[in-house]
Image (cartoon, rainbow over all chains, first blue to last red; front, top):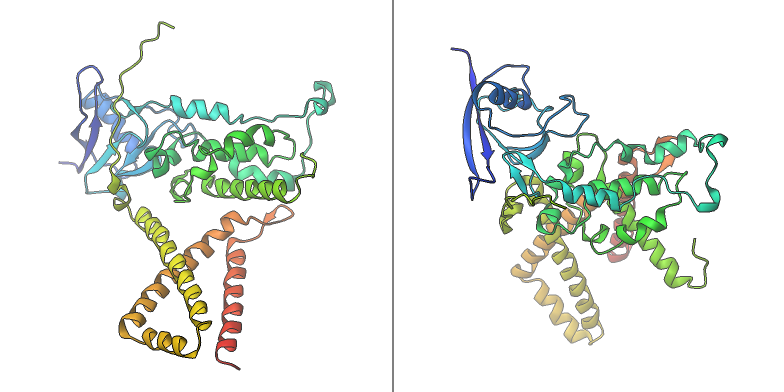
Amino acid sequence: MAETMKLEIFRYHPEKDNEPTFQTYEVPFLEDWVILDAINYIKDEIDGTLSYRWSCQMGVCGSCGMMINGVPKLSCAVFLKDYYPDKIRVEPLTGFPVERDLIFQMDDFMTKLTEIQPYIIRNKDEEKPLDEGEYLQTPAELARFKPYSMCINCMLCYAACPVYALDSTFIGPAAIALGQRYNMDSRDHGRDARQELIASHEGIWECTFVGECSAVCPKDVDPAAAIQRAKVSSTIDWFKDVLIPWGKKK
Amino acid sequence: MGKKEMSTYHRPFPNTWWLKRKPYVLFMIRELTSVFVAGYCIFLLVFVYKLTQGADVYGNFIDALKSPSSVALHFIALAFVLYHTITWFNLTPKILVLYKGEERIPQGLVAGMFYAGWVVVSVIVALFVLGM
């Protein structure tokens, strides 16, 4: 018989279950299968009731984030062979309410993402008419924020963040990193508008720099660094306010 | 607006979360080291205070510091302070992001500057203490 592997999957049906359970499935072991392939096999061949999110299968859409043996990962980016022959435990991303099986509720993240205003904000009098073309930027100016712009909103960083799991009012790694991405963009004037939220208690000061958000990020965004850098600039703001109170605010 | 609230399951997050993965344990150790850093700062303040109390008081204090338990405590504090310093120096390049044009200055170089500064300051202190 061909080699097989076992996946132990978190199951929760909102209309039938009070508590989640774990169900074990045996799937064929193929060298080139990622965990998402195995889960798709379960859905198609063994148990059609299993619910989970996925789309692109190439690490771009950010839909298939799951806890794989307790570590947040994109299930399309981890191979079965890296765990063979051990059993793999698959759970929904930590820190989010579970809707069904591996599907978690992402409304909180979506709200925070909107609140951080992740788009270019121009001063009213510096808005160019469309026919004057785009706002130009040098490669050096682009390099300053480019890593932070690679976020795919997969929420692995939230699942890795114990602060968010303990207190979900925390704005969280990806949203703050995106705020920082626009704050550092030479074309943007929106820092003051974002600062109220970023520098609030629920913002950067909640972060204790565990650093796991950056460790699990599939796109090397380094949200932990973005948050610490925002702490530095907020502290500089504070010192300027206290030491030079007569100084004109930007 | 007519949308039925879906019942969701909220998983418990136990206080032992930090024991579940090595990076979390290392983080908690880093947090704990702060206690030793603060404790040693207080110790140094006491040290200075004793110095102001005359030769006898200071001499007795120094003798007490030579006890095996005091020496052991110093070694423990040293281990935690080293862990604190090294982990934070290694994290510094994430916060201190420097560019030369489009190129980011390598993180190792930024951390290296801190280590170099540490060595220089340590040598100066050592020379001062040894009275050279």
